[in-house]
Amino acid sequence: MGDEEDIEDEAVTVSMEISGNYDEVMSKLATEDEGSTSLVSLLDDLEQLLDTVVRMDGGTRSAIAQQLPEDMAVSFDAQAVVDTLQVLERYDLVVLEGNTWKPGPKLVTEE
Image: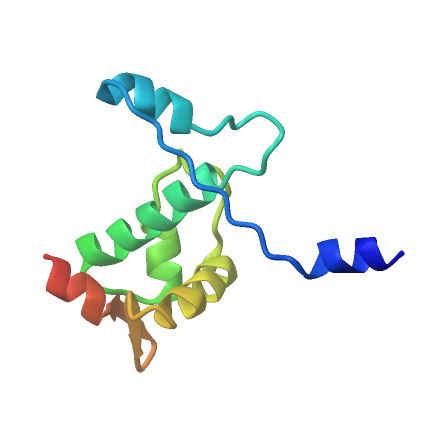
């Protein structure tokens, strides 16, 4: 049993080098979406929501909800818009001024 305890206390580091042309290396590094949770649709919806806020140069939650594209993965009503914008506010992507959501510091500096 003493041997098992010694093994558990040892740290192991593994390094790997992948060489070849760019396409071959990237194909080896690519992850399979199969069996894993994908955030692509969530990220697409968030991007469309932010694009709408920027395009409108801000608006109330209801106005933003009305202007969102119909092809979003999930439908957003006014409450879903404000819930999502409250999360994005933590990342300085939007700010709330009164009852109007506006592009935040990070979006304004990226333009």
